[in-house]
Image (tube, rainbow, N blue to C red):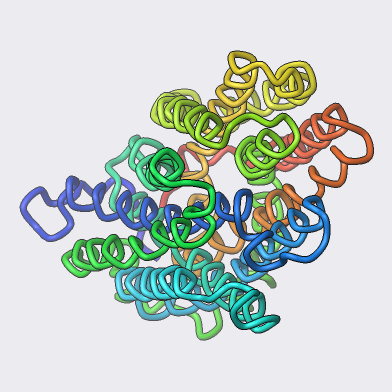
Length: 435
C-alpha cells in the first residue's frame, strides 16, 4: 500500500480538478439536493396534510404529512448502500451525476401529483413513492460530495474543503424557504394551496440541469485513482464495511443525530407549531427561518476552520454541550409566541446546527479507507438521519400535544447526549491520511 497520503496532494490549479472547480462542484450539488429535500419539508409543514390527507383534524393531517416526510429518511440508507457500492466500485464522479438525476426527477414529479380531491387514495401513494425516490437520491449524494472535496483537499485543509458540501444545506434551505416566503407574500391562501406550493418543486428541474453541467466537467478524485492503481477495490463494499468497519459506522451515525434533531425540530416542527398553534402568520415565520439559517451558514466556516486547527472532537464536544443546554430554551422562547424570542430560539438552534454539522464533511470520510469510504461515509450520515430526523418532527408533534414544548426540548437534549456518546467513543481523525 502506498505511504504517500492523498490528503497531501495539491489540486492542480489548471487541470479539471482545480480547487475552485472542486469547491463549486461539491457545493452546488448538495445545495440543489438539499433544496429539493427542504422543499418537501416546508410543504409538509404547510400544505401536504390538507392537500393529500384532507380527512381528519388538523393534528391528524400534520402527523400524516410528517409520516411521508420520514419515508425519505428510511430510503436514504438504501440510497447510500446503492450509490456507495457504485461510488466505491466505478468512481465518485459518475455516481454523483446519477444521484443528482434521481433526486431531481423525483422532486419535479412531486410538483405534478394531483391532490386527494382529484385522484383519491392514489395521490398519497404516488407522493410516498416519489418521496422515497428523493431519499434514495439524497442518500447517494452527500457521501460523494464530501469525498469529492476531502479527497482533493491540500494537507491540513480537509476540514475547510469538507465545509463546502456542508454549506449546501444552508443555501438549499434558504432558497427553498425564500421561494415559499415569496409565494406566501404574493398569493392568497387559496392560490397557495391550489397550485402555488407546486412551483418550488418544478423549479428543481432547472437547478438540476445546472448541477449536472458542473459535475460532468470534473475528473475522478486522486484517492480513487490511486486505489484503482493499487487494485484495492472490493466486490461488495457494504459487506466489507459491515464486517470490518462496523464500529466507526455506528459511531459516525450517532455523531450525526444532534445535527438532524436540531435542524428539523427548529424548522419543520417549529414551522408547523408556530403557524398552527401559536398562530404566527406563515410569511412571518418563513421570514424568521430565512434569517436564522444565515446564522447556520455563518457558523459552518467558523466551525470547519476550528476543526482543522483544534481537531474534530473538541469542536463537536463544545457544540454538543451547547445543544444539550439549548433544549431548555425551547419552552420559554418558542412557547412565548413573541416574534423576537421565537427568532432568538431559531437562531440558537440553527447556529448550533452549523457548529456540529461543519466538521462532519471531513470527519465521516476520515473514518474509512478509500475502498469503502463512499459507502461508509454515506451510511453513517444517513443512519444518523433515521435516528435523528426521520421521526423527529413526528415525535415532537406527539410530545407537544401530550406534554408541551418542555417535553420537546428534553427530546432535543437527549438526542444531543446520544451524539456526545458517539463522539467521545471515536478517535480523533484530523491527522488521518486519506490513502
